[in-house]
Length: 270
Image 1 (cartoon, helix red, strand yellow):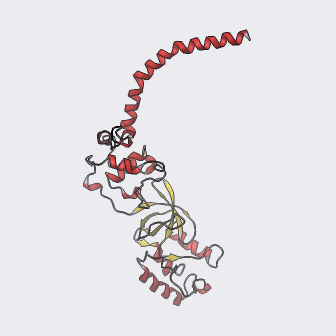
Image 2 (image 1 turned 90 degrees about the vertical axis):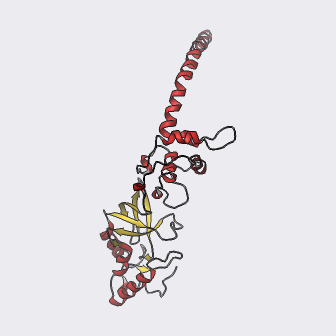
Image 3 (image 1 turned 30 degrees about the horizontal axis):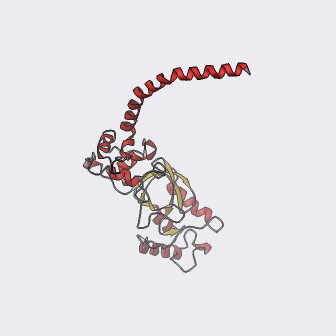
């Protein structure tokens, strides 16, 4: 018991003697660390003035010095604030794939994106005209799921892509393997270009897109080859009339899956 008391007393003396040193180190080093982080990561942009809760534009201007409009993937960014800067100041719309105003969904999952975006109001943009980009997305195919669904690497994230205006047989239906193989022959190992219509995401959180390999529209090729049926999912209707004619021609010629009767339901809408 005596030994325990002596050890406890010794610890108290040691901690008491170290306290002034700890306070000194904290006073001298902490401001340097916080300033460095604020400049590099841009955390100051998200802070609001304590006086009125208004965006700290001065902090936003300081953080802007750390950012530019060089294109980056979400995985290459230091923070959600940088992602918001790329979207708001540089117009990099590809970072907001579902057009909900939140760039890099994983990075900005718990962030107050509106407050960050407001912080940049009045801050001069660093975006040169030549960095203006289209709404198209480009990435390598990482997996062919079936005849009408693939995974594509976009901004460092594997994203599920559902082909627009068409449908192929499901796993337990006739011609499933043939349709999946036909799709794989067109896109497996390729870099694809994705083009949206009106509705961007389906109920399964898959991106709805027309898929291009160079100038080949894969959706069209699968319909023309008889491996896909045309389906109208309003409000998306681009290419619908064209695809409808191609399906009718494929059915008349007995191409692809049509001889199995899998597409003979008499309907082109869902």
